[in-house]
Image (tube, rainbow, N blue to C red; front, side, top):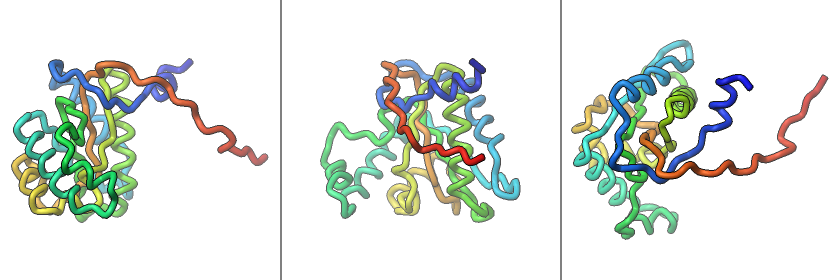
Length: 187
């Protein structure tokens, strides 16, 4: 089997990270570089990647996310605000925040492309990842979250669309069955 296809099929969402083992800077750099080489609408490349490894900033960001969860209309999200064990980035040693400038034509689509590139690159390097949505959908514009993002270096005015938890997996998640019957060939 082709190595690229094998990597695509081996990728899993990791939700249990080895907190004692951080990915090396060169590995994180390769992952972000893969994101930067993703396609973007009209090649605007309007993204910015912020790699957060600072544990104080990560903990403060988690506290801010938990505080806005209390305002959610959905009970499953609201319950996170009182759960002492809840950590939106699964305690990963690194979080790559993907933000977009106003110059982006299709920021959600561009984010999807760069996130997929980074997840595949990480898998090929033996590093686990999980797509994190809690900073998107307006959360990054909430003052308590924005204050922490400012300290982390996310550019002012950029809107966060996704983040990627990055680290070494404590255990490899199993392959889940794929949905069948979703492809039709018309000849």
